[in-house]
Image (cartoon, rainbow, N blue to C red; front, side):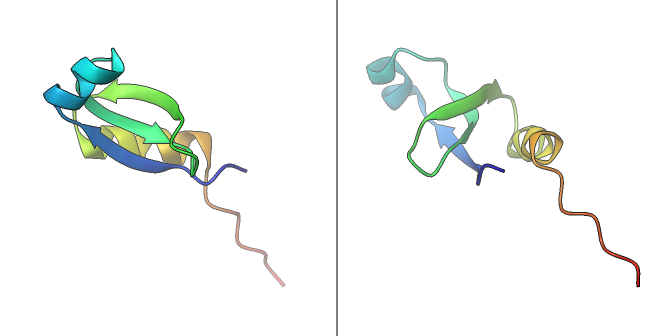
Length: 59
């Protein structure tokens, strides 16, 4: 399981990086995994899709 987090890339940085501005899911190392997404909520939804929370164990 990867620890992904949302990150917003603004226009100035997007020009420097050669990517579109928007929300990206990133690894701890800063590597982009998915994106760009229109909103932070869309980005977080994709993160949950890729890394669903662990299922609760029933005893």
